[in-house]
Length: 129
Image (cartoon, rainbow, N blue to C red; front, side):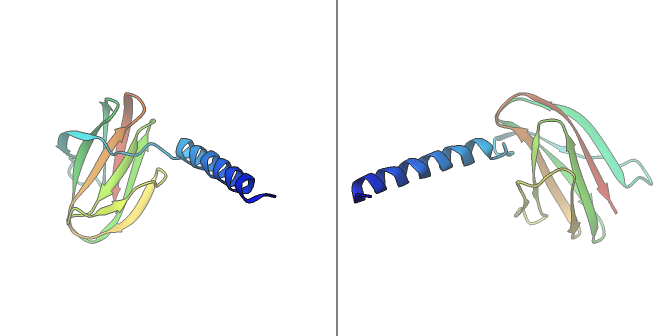
């Protein structure tokens, strides 16, 4: 195959794959944080839930206090996606399926829930064990 034709076909294949990968990538929480809320656990409970709605392109950040090193499970029902940041503000998890379980260190963790594609109503449940 002549080099120009080969290069053209390769470019076409790469462009097609890039388009497919872009379309297949999940929408992630990466918009503007419009509110910061503290997720409240009932006395004696290790789980807390909140039902909320976030507009397309925005996020709501939830703070979760963890007293002892334990595991944390984050579950989001609905078409929203989420990102988890550790107490130092470092990205801990993104592009993960729900429910997501991880070991955690003491401190205030932040879970940002949002959608880049549509307004979304969701339920966020966090369980600490």
